[in-house]
Every structure is written in C-alpha cells, then in structure tokens.
Image (cartoon, rainbow, N blue to C red; front, side, top):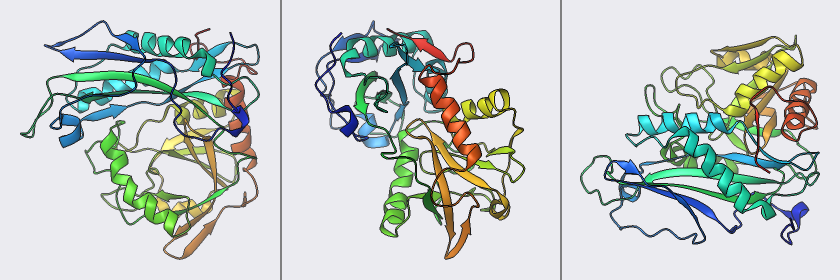
Length: 341
C-alpha cells in the first residue's frame, strides 16, 4: 500500500481531509446500516438541535503503525463504552458498541494511506461523534441523530521533546456537581474556551480546575486528567464524579502498577497538598502525558522538583512504557490493541 505524499515530520495537530468517513443516521427509532462516504460536508436545518441546544458528544482515539508494520488502534472498546455512557446522559440513542468498533475499522482501512509510517511520531487521529440533527425550537432532545467518524493525520504533540508546561489555577469552573463533567460532551469543552484563551493571553499553557462545590480539590484541565507522583514514587490521580474517565489515565495507572511495580492510588486530591508532590502531568489521547513544571496560584508559584527542562523520571517511564505498548515495542495487556491491517 502506497502512503500519501505528506511531510509526516512536518505535521501539526490539525485537520487534513482524508478520503472516506463513516455516517449512520438514526430516524424513526432505529439506526440505518451506515456507510463510508467521500463528502465531508454536513447539511442540516438552521434549527437543528445541535445548533440550538448543543446536543452533541464525541470521542477521540488514534491509529498507529507498529514496529512490525501493523496498523492498530488502542483500546477502542473503551471509547465505544464511553460514547454509549455519554449518549445515555445526553438523551441520545446509544450507537451499538460493536458497530462503533466496526465503523472505526472501516474508516482506518479506507484511509490507511494516511496512517503515518512507524518512527515518524505521527499518527492517524480518529474522531467519532454524534449529534441531534432535526429541527428543535422548544427545549427538548432531538428525535433524529447522526453518528459520524472521520480521521486526520496528526503530528507528534511535542516536537523536539516534551518540555514541561506552566499552568494556572482557574477562577472559573469546568463542570458543576451532578452535571456533565464525567461524559465527553461538546458543551463541556465550550465551557473551557474562555478560560483557556485567557490563560494563553496571560502566558500560561493550561488551567487547573478545582471542584466547583468547595474549590479545595483538584479536578482536571479543559481536556486532560491530572497525574501526580509523590516523593516516594506513588502515582496518584484525582477522583471525582465531575472528571472525565480518561482512557489514557486509566491505562497509565495499569502501566504504573503492572509494568513498573509502583503503588497507585485514585483518590480525592486536595489542592493544598499539590506542593508536596514530586512530579505532575496532564494525560490524554493527544500527548499521552504533558509534564507540568510549575503551577501559578494567583501569583504564588508551586514548582515541582522535576523542574522545567524535562519530564520527571517516573513520568518519563510511564510515557515510554505506554507509547511502547501502543507502537508494538512492548507486549500489551490482553485486549488493549486492536489490529486493523
């Protein structure tokens, strides 16, 4: 199979149209058979529910070329499960999880020429999503929905290596108690846009959101979970009903325990203990782990011993092991890797 003539090493994290995408429509209480199509444009009413009341959910995962030359995806069953949970919370029909996996397979196969070669650091990003498409003017769920999957080649999140970032404690809330923070709904990300633009204007890379109820506990950033390492090498992640259950974070905790032999703990993390951690990172699909070197709390700085030059030693081991699993250099736990080609 010939690859597209793309400068793989020059790719950023942006959108490039690929050849095919998958579409299935839900009407009269049932999903149709679905199909791959070439048209990347969506036509809908000006009064479509997604435009009026933001009834939309999505997922994100990647296809990789392994060391052996196989094209694989990483734990897509968890993306299918999470999309189903998001649909239930947003009063949307569940797209069957087996069909979700088959749709991802079809899109990757159809766009295999866009999957970057092994060793480039680039991957094929896959975006499944669903939205209410029929006209809704009163506040209520849609009746008709569309499920789609597109893909786009993306470059490595960190060009030239992962440099620690500086983040700030936000005065705004990402999600309300008993709200939608635990699902992957578009509205959650809309909530974070003003805060991230403000952070960037102020010279910071991201925000740390505290719990909306007491503002004493660490939750997450606009698009990633937190991971901390204690001075005695215990890996700790915050626990909250308002945090999105990151597949990367869950995988890193398994790697820490089963591959590196470290103690792991998922618990409430109070902000006043953050200064005592040795390392801090943000984990998600795009970067795997973004190391945090410094947190600014309204002018007061929390500086981690791992510093501003490189990932901390435990964070680096976690990153290397998980990416090694994804790229086929390290044997994966059963069920983690789905081979497509």
